Length: 251
Ligand code: SF4
Image 1 (spheres, rainbow, N blue to C red):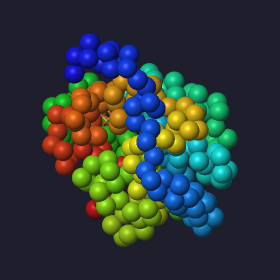
Image 2: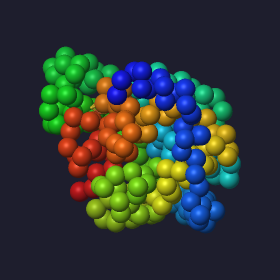
Image 3: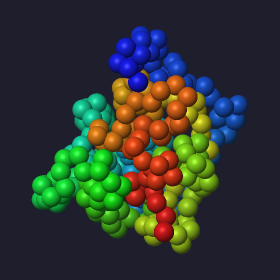
Image 4: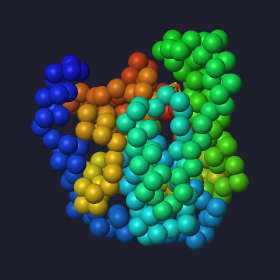
């Protein structure tokens, strides 16, 4: 997408103005989400929220803080995040009642990987891309989930074909981490997410105003064009069905 198109869109509207549109049953879905988060805190402690600081995750953190619930939050700071995401992380740490824990990759592993495979290894093959995700995301994720009984994610059924059957609560054996997995926004639409953000004036990543609906590491995320799929800007050089970093892949 050309920079002139991006800037002309920026002049038009912010993400809150563009996307906020509640479903007719939004109130029901919100109550369902709140009840699920309360159940997670009451019956599944210790439980933790995994946050990428994307739109869905800032909604969940806001709900945890406003209910309020004894659920800490963790962020995987991969060392390759956008400056906008890092700035939002700082603001969130400053304002959240729930503790925000940051997990970073093992520095020596990152240095070794970059030295052996190169800074741009993720573009060379899917194996190398997954190896990079392994070092920067999966190993820190394993540490973040150690000792937990459950975790909470921002997965939504609408996000992609591979997420179309995401349940509100996943306790299936094929759950890769052997932890109960809460997906309290599973049934929310993109319009619902932005309706909540707009209504509650939730702080969000300004990249969403620049047509980044799904935000990951900077080298692996781009803005999308009109009509492109929600996750088209993630690992855009790969096949649609392979667009997961391993955080949410089942056995
Ligand atoms: S998303 Fe890209 S930069 Fe981030 S860990 Fe995966 S391959 Fe590496």
